[in-house]
Image (cartoon, rainbow, N blue to C red; front, top):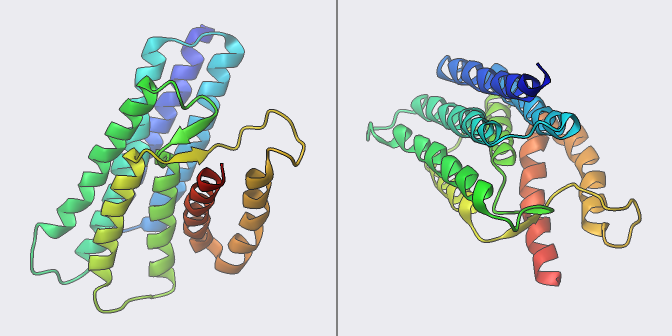
Length: 225
């Protein structure tokens, strides 16, 4: 019985991604973001549960990647697509380019499954971080009524940059601690402490700022090392 528990949690992640996608197509981006976050919570606990119960399996690994691509690849692509459709874009195919992100997310997840270098960190932007960035950014733009000439093109170019970051050979730190001391964990503690004011000042949009700051800090840490 216990061997099915992690896969059940993974399926809850997948279902959350499906619901997020539904709300994205309804242009309810706040609820779409909420279900992406719920999916991320399930994604955090499925691997932990598998390790605690000692029931990790190849099928669980494959199922996890499938669920992640729905929740952190397809759902944010649908959010971007829905947002771009709100503009009067004369080239009808442009909003559909948002779904390129779903393909690159799948590629990122496939690489992660095969790359043995990513035990203590990441190579490229993690898909949950990418999904959280775009979900919170679009919600923030919508909540504050931010719009300017060429915004749709900026969103599209930004999504293509995200596609590159997903598969880029850029080491990015993970919030995994071997010990709780400052030495060796400087970047992690700086990142955690800086998240608080960003969220307090920017609200939901703060998540997008946090992910951007995470990428910048990772590049700085890599250059320093």
